[in-house]
Image (tube, rainbow, N blue to C red; front, side):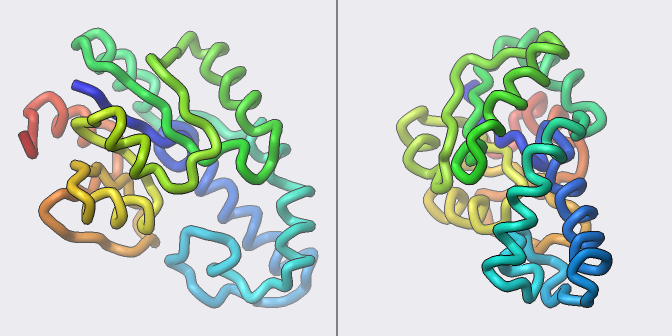
Length: 192
């Protein structure tokens, strides 16, 4: 099978780290309580920050936090199992679209853990075109809007949902909260 995977919030625990430091930045540096939508994925929708606040956070934290972020528990092991089972794994990520050095950090983290993928698609804000052109059997992502778009367009989607994020239910989506669930779905060929 061909399986597309996002990086942040799926393989690397970057999204949780980003939300943690977003809250700290909001409370400590900006000295306010600007959280307006707890279950929003994007910083611009999560806080009542000005464009300057958001830009400062991006420049101050994005790359630094990416270098500190570890793998989500089980991700490395399940990726290895999926590859041993003969699946083709393809990275489809928005990394590099906002901050240039983000791709390099991910590549270094993968190399350090001896992980590689069949293909890499960087700077992909709308992943539907790549998912269709690659004829994916599954796409694994943690972004509600991306999962909604993919699933509503016929792409079988595994939504790696953190407990605070919005729920998404339709016939092409299965929600998971850990990599064991992902392996179970693919091993049992759910959807197919």
